[in-house]
Image 1 (cartoon, rainbow, N blue to C red):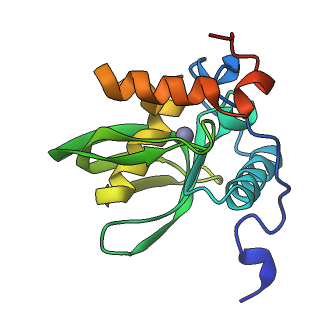
Image 2 (image 1 turned 90 degrees about the vertical axis):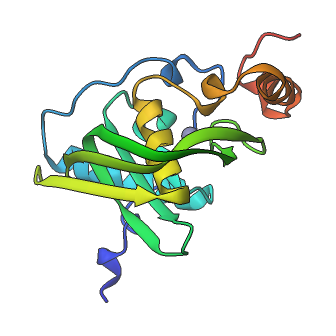
Image 3 (image 1 turned 60 degrees about the vertical axis):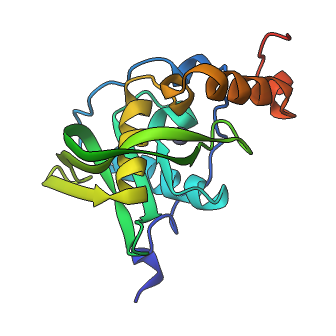
Length: 186
Ligand code: ZN
């Protein structure tokens, strides 16, 4: 395999946006130009995701308000899913709702049991504008739902309630990165 075919090998990691950054709360715009700039963005997103040892990354997590995400994520059967989606739409979620451990590169070091459907289908486009349909179960379905939430300005902690939510937000407020991110002290 030629090295240039490995996703991210032509990209460079960009700084991650952290909880409290307004870029994470803004819904992202549809991509209209399937050009070299988009291809470079996707390469940089892979490079950023791998550098941070994540399993998925949305464009607004590096401050780019476009509807794009990348993933390299196992499902519950340890099947690896690797790819990217441009202008993704979550078209189907079903199966049981499972509360499983979930984390996010924008809240480093924090995890919380988060309810998600066990099956998800996302439609979108490739970097070349070709239609794509991606279906996932288990942890990969969780990843697809998590990344779609990002593009609508959401975070997984928004899906938590009660004690779980308070615990996660308290941990975020105490995290070493909280001050750097400009979180109000509490
Ligand atoms: Zn995330």
